[in-house]
Amino acid sequence: MVEQAVKVKVEDGSRSVDAPKAFKLQDMVRLLPSRLSYSTIGIPLVDGGAACIPRRDLFDIRMQLMAEDPKPESEQTGQGLVASMLGNNDIQKQMYEGGLKSWECSLDLVACLENDIDTFFPVMGKDDVRKQVYEIGCGTALPSLCLFQHALKDCYKAVSFTLLDYNFDVLRLVTLPNLFLNWIMVKSDPSEWLAEDELEVTEDLKCSFLFDLANNHITLSFVCGRWSDELFELLPPPEPQNRPLILASETIYSPENIRPFIAVLRRLLQSSAKEHATNARALIAAKKVYFGVGGGVAEFVRAFGAVGGFTRQVMETGTEGVARVVLEAVLL
Image (tube, rainbow, N blue to C red; front, top):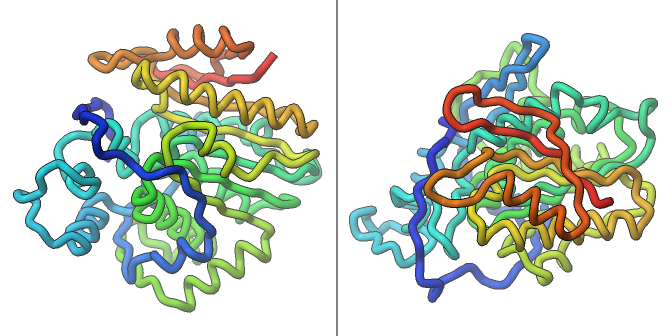
């Protein structure tokens, strides 16, 4: 299921997420559930093929949440994160930003990356620098999963992924499980991989996952919290001679989100330039207009331009209803 419309519940701000925090992969892996139910989404590409990305089923996440908080859903009062995630609203401001669901612009970003992978994520021989990927507001992390598959299958010097989401529970319930599922798919015999199934998560599988990533020089980092200077300080800094690629989808749906998003984006691009990184860039997928919420591409482009940013459109889709685009953003 891919979400399109956005239903927002406004909180008074008295309950919000904790201060930004960073988490190590080893600690996150310990939190994987014993079983994962998944389905594989196929994203059409211009060459007629499809990008196949397994992701944890939403009902499986809901079952885990209810097991962890056994209070009946009818008794969830809306005062906590679990109630927000189990409720009917896609977003509850200052509590939950919709990270458990896959939003359609994230599929656009996957298609954009896959259709021009040699430009955005070239393999060694075409580009011998280390690579760093940051996904802001990652949620189910479909764009990062696309590149993660390439990092596992192709020849790269080293790749680091930093996954950022408002909620720690999103990172543990869906972001990491999706990375784990994609690793298993890539390492499996294609004839044995099932598009839908339930996977047993054993300790041996967890150890193999950690060992294989280390052996392939792939680093995963996780950071949660609201977009702020404090969150930025927790991010692994761009390293000299790296090629940072910043990804984001459906992050500019609200006017109040645009400025803090730009603040983090700008600092990442600035720090890349400071470290002499090569061709740092951001790809941002969004609807042109978010009806009933107030955000959109035009407001982002104006605000980003006001702080020295430049954008160009690299993809447009969604001929029926609201148009969707992917923008490339850089600092001048």
